[in-house]
Each structure stands twice: as C-alpha cells, then as structure tokens.
Length: 171
Image 1 (cartoon, rainbow, N blue to C red):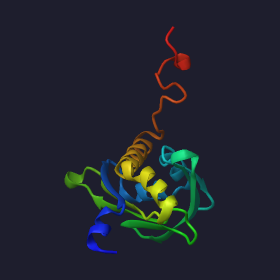
Image 2: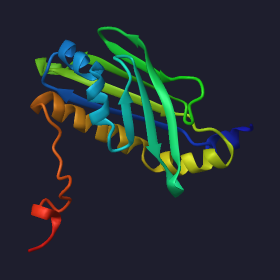
Image 3: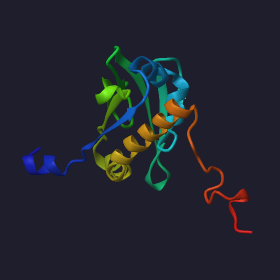
Image 4: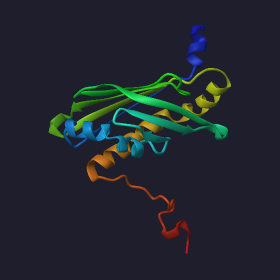
C-alpha cells in the first residue's frame, strides 16, 4: 500500500479524557465491574459481560449489519487497564484507560484511547461508514456516562421519553 492509500484508510481511533473527583483505585474498580461496561457502551454496542475480564460485543451498523467481537482485559495495573479483541473479531480493536492524579488534588484524570481496525472489502467499507463518523463521539459518550456513574451512581437518561415528557408526546 502506498503512502497516499494509507492516508485514506480509515483510522478509527479516538482519545478522550475526563477528570473525576474520586481516587484512582475506586475508579479502576468501577471500570472493571462487568456491569459498568454494559452501561457505558450501550449507546454504541450491546455488551454482554462473560466474567470480570471478558465480554461479547455487538454493534449495529449500516444497512442493518451486526458486527461482533469478544474483548479481554490483557493488562491491568494500578495506573492503566488495557484490552483487546480476540481472534475472529468482525472489527478488531484495542483500548486502554490510564489513571493519573488530577492537578490540585482534584481527583483522577482518566485518559481513554480506543482504536478500531476494520477489515477490507465491502465489510470494511460498511464498518468504516459506521466508525468514521463517530469514534470520538463513542469515546466522549462513554466517558460522560462513566463520570456520571462514578459521581452519582447512575447514568442520566430520558429513555424511553426522548422529549423528556410523560409518554414522550405533547398534551
């Protein structure tokens, strides 16, 4: 692949950061809770936690396509958590979350990096359309949900009332 072609290939990588007024140990434990993953990624994929290190993912793509993969935590220490999709993933991916003390003793900075590596061909084109538009939004939304969960114990939503009205209709 020449350099020009490499530049046009989808780089479905995204980074985001957030500061949360909680200790890193507490945030790390919350992130590793399998039910947390189910909740914070729900805008992007259906996640089924298999255990505390492994999860099955299903993202809904263009034209009704479903893309599936299994992830596993491959490295977990006090300052970072790293995960990767396993062999056979429709959308191979990796991610890492690092924890750093926030300036001024204001809690912990979380830095989230996620990279999707869609396959080539027609499947790759469809996945590229799905991920090209939203990788940064996927990460930002997950961090927003995680921060809300860490600070309040819940994730705010208007579901099933998108208009935030009783029944979702004008009366």
